Image (cartoon, rainbow, N blue to C red; front, side):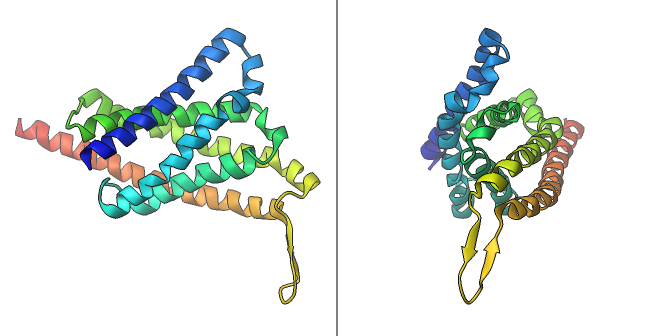
Length: 219
């Protein structure tokens, strides 16, 4: 199991490192022109990494990975909805700046997270990396939530025009599910869920800082 979980973290680290490095190199090489085709160049790898992250729910359930199930479920659901439903289904959204920003924020956070988890699985801990792992979310996660909400906002006119995912339920329901309304409800759920996740991450960070303080007093 240790070999498996280490291999999983290593694969995710390689995938997100490739995304993160690719975004930076493309921007330095082509400037703003690289932003428009971020999804076409990087989207496939991002979707593979995101699909693979679903395994983490099984890891937590089986006890292979130590974490709380619900916060991780919310985080994975957030990205899955935005990536596969909002961005992948609307070609007009794929060329927006917000896609590049989202991919940058997601990959930045995950490069640090999977580096920490990979080394922890091997029994290796660096104090500086651990502190970054527990603190990086403070500026980046709220920015990620805002970027996700903006991506939904940018997609609304296209869902309204194309009618994508809007369906009519026949008798006995006889109602039309208008997908832009679903997305607006999702935006409210997104902010409510982000509060829960931030609270969980804040408690984790306090536990880490508390344990450091106890160790410092003992030494």
